[in-house]
Length: 305
Image 1 (cartoon, rainbow, N blue to C red):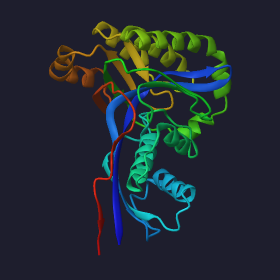
Image 2 (image 1 turned 60 degrees about the vertical axis):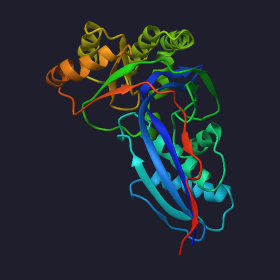
Image 3 (image 1 turned 180 degrees about the horizontal axis):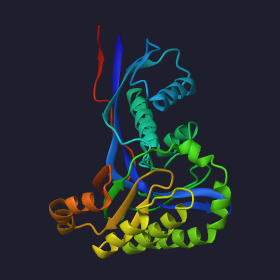
Image 4 (image 1 turned 30 degrees about the vertical axis):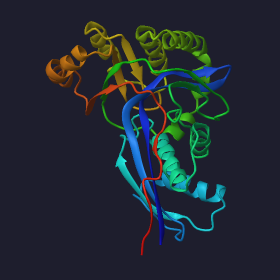
């Protein structure tokens, strides 16, 4: 049996700095973080059976797409999930899984995956995030026709809370009234996007956080978060700069400057207060991440059997 292996890791997101529409076309600006989907794909070119968790249907879809695209008579093997992101929270778990699996498979087949190739594969399955691109990217997440890399990631710490439940990305983007919602807030989202671009260009986290807060406030109409106002007030009183939200998910996060003292304060002093005051079912601290797929060339290739 001929066996080859590829390994790839794709970051998740802490929601989106900005999401809305420009001239009626939906777009988002992702917020990549240091949490990942990491996948190892072991390929058998004489099998048509994949071993992977049954719930990972989108990963199976992209593997089958690649078999068709590459015109392979047989393609199977094993997909191992070494790191996973929480699902349904707005952390780009599906896009990260799809991108990491596709990249790992292509590496195992001795091909070099590109960010654009991974984006197009993900878009064939569902509206997607732009985490396969390095830096921070503005992205037409519904059709995938346009993307623009805005610049490098600005260092930040995120205090992320979630109060349970999950939202399906495809169903959210098909909601009645979403287009009208985008139209109604297009001017505000335009201002938020301009401010976000300035923040990225200037490395100004405060501008990015204000942009994130503006977009998150608009999003409440379609995706209410009852704790939004008290949490935002608490963040601002504790030296935070604003919030960022998962527009089609349940996550809400405070944005704080990146420093060791902030990290120590969170871990030593504020964790119990946050838990008591806001009673989340999920609480975590993230750091911003440069974005993009991290790949290992074929780790080994062997003849087994």
